[in-house]
Length: 73
Image 1 (cartoon, rainbow, N blue to C red):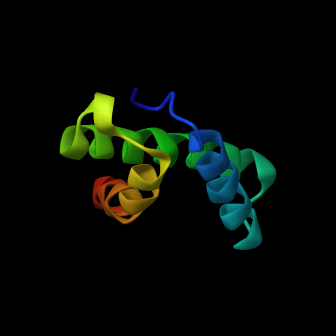
Image 2: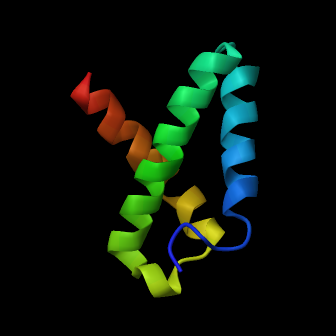
């Protein structure tokens, strides 16, 4: 249920590697990546419900998570 679903760690790894490939340092990518992963998970949980979430739902909500982050800064 929720973020404790199979594949969510793989999604986090992909986010981290994607950020590092864009030139973020490993420290910055880790901080930003973990935050975005959690935020996308929260958005997905609101949309799907914790019990029905799968890792792909986190991926599907990454764009919204980025937009929320950029609006705050």
